[in-house]
Length: 187
Image: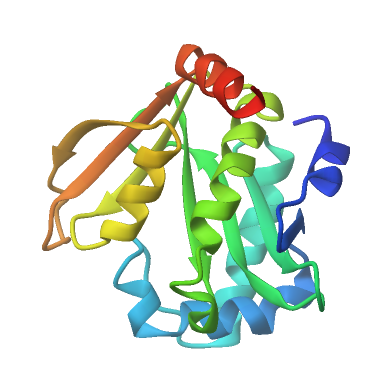
């Protein structure tokens, strides 16, 4: 992955971005040890800070391998850690990358996801150079579905995953869709 300077230049009204660092472990643990957060993610709850350290090590290793782009979402106002957005090789379709976002609870329902999604899309196509970008959303997570739809993703399919009680919605944006999306956002 190249163009990491693009990450540091990219900002939204309230957020800026950087790679996840070891020093983020307490903030990430706070998020991923919360059952309310985990119910929307396809991952196990973090029971100790060691779980979070292992995750950050995985992020660093997979970043070097070109399989993950783990970015911290930081408040422009006071440098508070808001959450993480991760662009990673798609678990279900190796022709694409997918996005995962997790935020501290105090930032829920404040429009952060919708605000950062255009940057995520830009990074997926302009830094990672993927041809397809997907977002997977659990059926109950309506705000995330709306955010993806508002930003040019199309519902591709609905499917079940063993061990998950509800349906998963797969949203897709292709490179061609991104080119059209970018023209609309720029104009």
